[in-house]
Structure formats: structure tokens, C-alpha cells
Length: 186
Length: 312
Image (cartoon, rainbow over all chains, first blue to last red):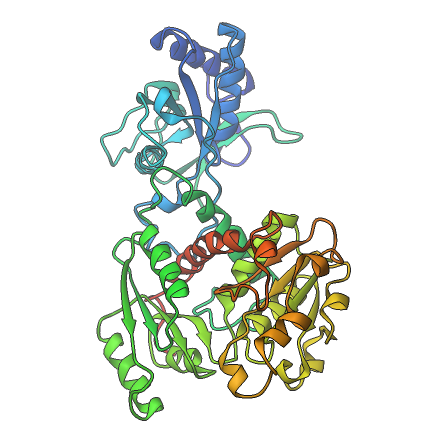
């Protein structure tokens, strides 16, 4: 386990840029191993944090398996278990799944796995596109505190957090290295 | 939305930003209607009442489908307009509906201002589905949605609206919306079918369809209501078709990629020729598809608010 560095006011870095890349490369390897290659696999990022990770995993799968797998995105706003009471009406992103769900093992990709409610909503959303062969879950960070019986098949790093802490996955931000930061929510 | 909207009573009350948010939200629901499962669980447990004082199968059905695709419970109430003393009975109806705790009331009424009246007496969100000659905001939104999908934008487009403008809430709501988003609007009708005070609408006024269509990006034809004949506002349907009906020859004067719209139901051979209505340039059926998406967007944005605010 890498040493946890401190970054600024109370935020601790739990993964740096290199560690993120290594974790994703290992996850891509595990996806290919478990599914006996990349054929038939499709990656679906959970908006918004999961989408760039899905594209990175595709690039890593291409390196390892010489195959481009389809990538989609799913927005869970309409499937939230608090959709009818959440205020104000949240902005809805578009779901883009342009391949037949039926023929694929879908790997849902999210940045942080927390209560599991987002994953539950994402599974429901995907099922409304069709009946996939299987759905697997990949999360860069598993921070615990599950409220539903959901677990990840591929985890970048399991991080112990307090419920009131924030986990920020910083990717592709101008002038800043990729990192995963844990801080106290204000 | 900057200040969340409680009701959708007219386009007049909406800012350009509000309109764009309605259109953008509706894009998401347009996708939902093309999926294998054309339904999302978002409004489970919410109740939508369609209160129609005027017969309108297509608008009512469109709202009904929209509500069902959001998993709301949809109740259709058609009230005969012949019931006694209207103001009183409308208030009584609203009080009765209020006791059923609806989240959204969709209302169509022959009197301008009916939706506003109901909004003052209910906790539910109210959607105006057409009130007299006043407004028909969801029609204007679905028209704008259709135009935006076909043309990629609304700003700087030339939109010609032709037909019975005087009695058309569709023309009114469309003119307000299109101008607010930067389009150029033209009205074309015989003088007897042009509203009083049309100068204040900020539109160009024509009484010659050919000239009104010249260089247009969008040509929107409105239904000519046969009862106007008995009011002697037009000489005969044949005469009207000859001077104000859209045919292929007149459409040639519009831009080569111009689209043709009609809110329905059409009088083929009167305000629009069949070969135009069925041509590849016609987006009339796209308007129907857009209608469901836009009404889903409207119900979604309003129902999230409904039941939260106190009676104002």
C-alpha cells in the first residue's frame, strides 16, 4: 500500500497519477482474465465520474487485447430512489448506449463506490435497454458504507473513510496531476 | 432553472433560459421513447390529472402517454362545457380534485385565463394545455423542439405561421417563444383572421402566402376551423385553399431545405395540400413524437416541485 500523502488543507491523497494508471491497468487485466479476453465486453460509465474512466479502461484493454470494446454512458437521475423528492429538479445527462445490450457483458464503471444506491439505479437503467449477458462492476475507489447488497468485481483501491468525508477523483484537470483526494466535507 | 417554476401557464412567463431548460430536458425523454423499455420510474407515486373542458384527443393522449412513461398515475377527466355557471363550477371542480391530492393538473379550457384561475386555487402544479385564444405553451415547446432538431438552432431562423391566427393560441405561444429565442416570425392570414393588436406581437404581417413564405426556414400551417365559415370570416373553403393553402408551388419560394409543420388535425386540401403534408420536408409526425418527449420534460420539471410549496 502506497504511503498516503497529505495535500493542502486537510485533504489526503490516496492515489496519485501513477497509482491510478497502475490500478486501472490491473483492473483492465482482471476484466480480460475474468471474461477470457475482451470480446463481448462493453464498458458503461456512470455519469459523470465513471465516463472518463471507462474510456481509459478501453484504451488499456486495447493495449492488452488488441480489441476496441464499445463504450457507453448511463445517467441515473431518472432512476434515483429519491428522484421524486430531490429538490430542485436536477440536471439530467443523456444516456448513450449505442450497442445492443443483449449481446454483451456490461462492465459498469464508476469512480467511487459508496452506498451502492447509484449502482442499483444504473443497473435498472441498463436493464431498460435490454437484457445483458451479465453486469459486472468496476470502481476506482471503494470507500465502504454500503446501504445495499452490492459489491464491486474490480476495485482500484479500497479506502477506509468516515461517512462524512468526501472523496474527489481528479482526472484530466488542467494544471493538476490526476489524483484521488479524501477530505472533510464542509 | 433560475427560480424553479411552480406552473407552466404560458410562454409569456418563461425566460429564454427556462425555455432552453425545458427543451434540453425533453431531449433526454425523447431518447427514452425510442428505447426497448419506453418507461422510467421517476414519477412513481405521483398523480397527474388531465382535466379537459374541450375535446382534444391528441393533446390529452400525448399528456397521458407522457405521464405513463414517467410511471405517474394518470387520471383523465373530460368535463362537458355545457355545465352551469362556469366560474363557480370550475372552482368546485378544482376543490374536488384538490381533495384527491394530485401533484399535477393539466387543464384545457375554452376560456382564456382558466389555467391561471386553477393555479390560484390548488397546491398542485398546473400545466396549461390550451386556454381559449390565450396560450398553448406545450405546443410551442414541442414546435421549438422539432425545429431545433431539424435545424440545429432557433436563432436567426425565419418562421412563417399561416392560417387562422386570430383564434390561435398556438400562433400566439409560438410567436412569443420563437422571438424570445431569436427567430424571426411572420404571420400570414386574411385580415379577418388576423388578431386585433397584431402590431404589438413583434412579427411581420402578410396577407399573401407566397410573399410570406419567401426565403422561410420553417412554414407552419394552422388549421382553418370550419365554424369560421358560418361566422363569414372566410368566403368559402375553396376560395381559402386557393389563396391561403400551402401547395408545392408556393413552398418552392421557401428555402430549399425548409420544413413544413402543422399542429394537427389537418384539413387536407384546405390549408395544406396532401403532397406537401406527406413530402419528406414535412415534420408533422415528428411534432407528434416531440409532443410526448416535451410533455414528459414538463411533467418531470414541475412534479419535482409539486407538493413542496404552500398554497400561495
